[in-house]
Length: 586
Image (tube, rainbow, N blue to C red; front, side, top):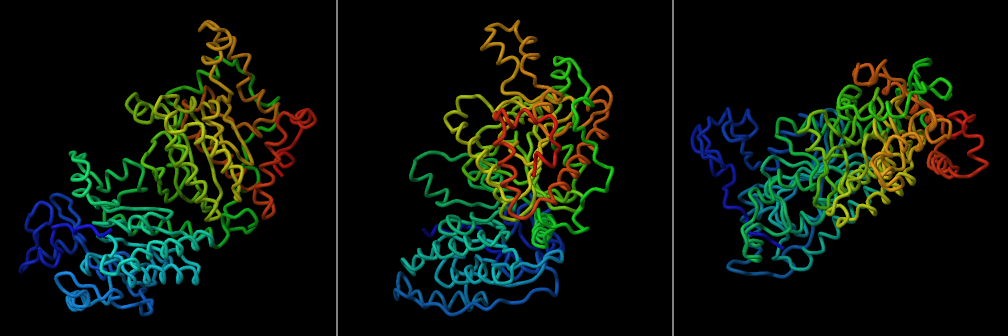
């Protein structure tokens, strides 16, 4: 459907003389300064609308841009007339903008990395999606496919072009099919949502990308806020459909100001390029892939070498508030981490974090439970207990890793999945099951580390890995000691007995083959020297990834399934304590 364009005037209509009026707060800004600020108001932060040419100039490397030709499409298929003939409206739009249509397609580079971009221009009939615009987006996708490079979509649209009838409607399916081909080819797709993005564009190619970025304040939705408000006869929430609202509801990955956009795009493109070169694939044995040098693997693989501490003490250390968190590990380990958010179904769960980064020059997808240290942090992160949205976000990022061909590294630290009413209503069991299923099916190497608490299925949902490691003072259990005591001992006094009976510490779990190795911690626990503890876990992860590089292409998934197939088999479990990691994994 075609929504009514915003009353905010285009940037060109706001300029007068040497000054520009901010579209948000109406402050007068010196034009040259406004240009230096990339069209962002220094007072209120409002982002002005840009033409397609301005957008291309801001995002792509100077001198790299080349136009991509788009073939002819049908002209005025319905011979439509409202207050004026559609053909006349087209000619007026072309004369006013200098464009043939609402989408420009170019190839070029961002931060030196190649891509194809389809950039919408709202000035041309409100950026509406007609046959020519749909053809342009489709050609952009087909060109990206032919050149084996990522696709960038910059959206600005009021919706479908009504004057072209059902042919306009068909562009939603046409462009979505083109996006599907890029998914099948393993090519990264990124959308940059600008204000406004509505109707048929938001309900097709705009929201199908692997990564969706949005400018501050940009609005996106299927129907416009005015239409919704009039239909349901209710006042809409403050900031409804803005980028910030979309981020909070898990519908976009990040909100980025214009000064940050090139850098964020560059990071994503570098990961995709490294994956295409094979640096992250299991069969690549090249020297540039970041495999650790001999002798740097700290992992203990014989249970006799693992300290045999009282289980109650280990539980206390695993839950210590000062243990390094997932984001602290990621910040210490990685270069260029881009956090990706949202389950794309209306929720964002802060108890699960994930994103793409380089780990010792290897592109990886990192997924983790996130707790925090202070009470406000813990509350905001739901004490590391994911809702269904957290697991659905994790699954989305797992599938992206599989598509791009990059290894997955998960850090596990959760008391368990959130056991609330809303979680059950939203399908907590299904969300966990889908994570297990997806991890079992990933075609890329997976390494998991239990860094703190490994609580029940909520932990295992991120733990179906080729190599599973465990920190020396971590725990991994079918249920919390408190839960076990309540169910079996039927009294809180049974907690200490449950702690011992569950065999939830590193040494017995290594003996049973549940984990493949134990990562040592500083004396007294990871919280006594978080930096050193994190560095040791990093070395263990790199060593595990290095081992998995010897796994032949096509074998890594089968090896992972064999690992979990063995659990419970008497024959397999009898020899678990004596198996080497290579035998267990490969």
